[in-house]
Image (cartoon, rainbow, N blue to C red):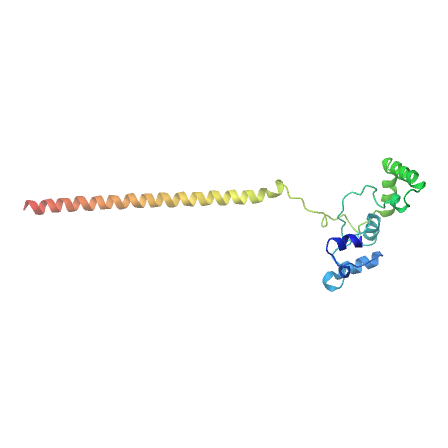
Amino acid sequence: MKSYYEEIGQTSTTLNPNSTPEEYADALSRGSKNGGVDEIVDEIPYIKEFLTQYPTGYSMVASEAITSGFGFVSAFPRGSHLAPDISREITRLREDGTLRMLENKWFTYQQSGPPSNDSAPKVLNLQGLRGLFLISGVSMAAALFIFMLYMVHEKMHFTYTMLKLGFIMRFLGREFANAIAI
């Protein structure tokens, strides 16, 4: 794991080897700015054991592992005659559900109190955006209505101004005609 992080540019000074749940909890609670860490990358069973002892405040983010935990077969040297048999048995145990049952029995963590959805990731969907769409639609309709009122007011003001101008022209026209006739 260390060589992988060094390949992607992480220096060995930013990697902290922790091995016990207590060390995990201490490092996570301190955070990277205080000599701790912001995340822990480890094998799933170790993380589940940590979450068993510290169920609140932490969550696991991981994709489903192929072996649901340890890479058992990789522990054997190449060419070992035990590797195919062990691999076959692990596959059988995984397929018939025994591995999952053992994992749930040994590594399922219990939360204290009622289950909390606080740490569950929030999924953004169309239903979650309906309030935003409603606010946007009402705002747009109000803006359009105000614009239309303004335009009608301007049009009426223009019409009223033209009527006044016409009245003045007629009045001046009569006065002008009377002045010429005298």
